[in-house]
Every structure is written in structure tokens, then in C-alpha cells.
Image (tube, rainbow, N blue to C red):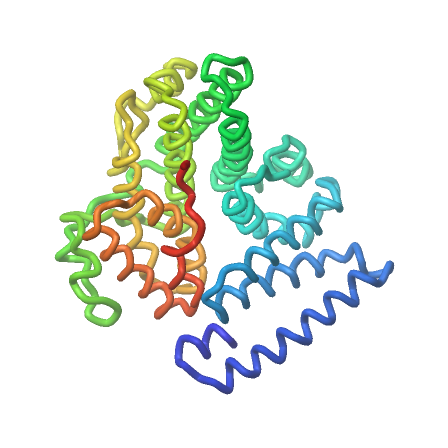
Length: 357
């Protein structure tokens, strides 16, 4: 309702949404105080939906961050075993990205990087664990590395010290796991990503040519659900490469590739996407993220597509330094707000930096 009101500038819908929001907050608080309702999976769903309201109704992201943190606390205190059955498992699955996004924004480790949370909810139905869930598992490990990096910097730890060496080892291991995931994605989804000339991608209904003209070609995908996965892989890799730069780690991609079995490596690329290689750079990854944005803004389910872009856009704004590119990204952000109804997207360029200081 609020998303429609923001989209159409309908004040009545926005007012009605605010009233329902207030009622929902009170009801959720009552449920959490009631011992018979406290453990209901519906509380997790309600808190998650309140966060969606915050994204739609306000430019300031602090409310959304608070709700993501609240969802995380509700889930963590119940334990992984609680989420082995439906509908609790489904609520847990859709809540993971907001919880991880909050951890990244606060530069604080996330309980979702623990092995129990990566395995137990799927024990009864392992077929439900997809490659999308697996790359989210890896993204969940990034906040811990960022927190550890901050702690080591504050302590002015020497780069040759044991804590720093152990941190660097974990960083390279995570990069290797991401590379392995990427190789498996290439085999699981051959030919799913392809290049389209920017001049052919313009739709007069939704955007001007300037919105898609930053790159000569952009990336389209056969299906939305397979397009989401490399986006999450790329933002994870971008932050890890950033950490490697901060700690002057030389040849990090080379070290990561050496830890992987050659038989896992694809013989050749079947997609128009960058495969892991020894000279991999942040710029390559950033360009792939930006060239994929247009696809995510097209087709049905605009709200879902817009939500998928919120975290990548925040991270992209952190690393794009060229003013022309930033102006182009700003146009993309305005489209997310205009077409998807998420006012918070207008502030992604002003939110806390995801780059290392």
C-alpha cells in the first residue's frame, strides 16, 4: 500500500499505510510479551515486513537497519533447529540478506556465518539448498572479516604479527570459496548471461538513453533468479579485494586459485561474465555489477528487483570514484525509487561507506 502511495504520490495510501504500520508495531510488541505467542514464526515475518515498510516510506535507512537487527535477534535466539520446518524455514531464508546487510553496514560479525545456520535449516530437505543460498552463506562471512580488520587497525597490529597472518589466511580462504562457487555456477548455468548493446536496451517507457549508455554493452540474463547470484558473488568479492588492498596482500587472487583443485576449473567460459583469474581487479568486478543493473530494473516484480539492488548499489557507490560514473549511478538510483517505490534508495550514496578506511 505504502509502496503504491510513494510510487503514485498518493497521500491517502501513505497515511493509511502509516496507520497500519503503527498497529502492526503494537501487535508485534504484544506478541513478544506473550509467552504463548513469543516463539511464533509469524513474529519473524511481521518484523521483516515492517522493515519493508521502512524502505518504502522513509529516505533515512536507520529504521530499516533497526528492523533488520530485530529480525536477526528474533532468529538467533530461537536457534537453527527452530527453522527446520515450514513456514519458519521460509521466513528464515528471506530474512538472511537483510540481516547480513545490517551486519555489513555496522561492520559487525553476523551469526549467520556459523556452520549450524548454513546447514541445519536444510537438513530435512537438502534439495531446497540452492546455489543462491550457498553464495549468501559466503556473503555472511564478509562482516566478520571487516570487523576483524577494524579491530586489527585500531590495535595497530603489525602486518607480520600472528593475528594479522591468521586474518589474511581467512581472507584468502574465503576468496577461494567464492572462486569455487563461481566455477560451479558457470557449469550449472551455461549460457545464461549475454551482452546486449546499450543502444538496443533503451525502453522509452521506463528510462532515457542516458540511463543505460555508460557502457557500450550491458549484461542481460535468461532468468532473474540466476542474475541475482553473480551480483551477490561480485559484491562479496569486491569487499574482500578491498580488504586485501588495505593489508597490502600481494597476488591474493593467485593465492586463492592455488588452493583449488584444477578439475573444478571450467575449461572455457560459457557466459559473458568474468571468471576468476590471477589478475582480477576491483574495477573488473565493479564494471560487471554496473553492467548488470539495467537487467534487474526490467520485467515484472519491480519491488523484488528493486530490493535486490539496494545492497549492490550502496556498495557500488562506495567504490565508484569517477564523477561521470557516479552521475550515471545516481540516475539508476532515482529509477529504483521511481519505479520500485523504495524511497530509501535515494539515499544510498549518502549511507555509511562500505570501503576500508
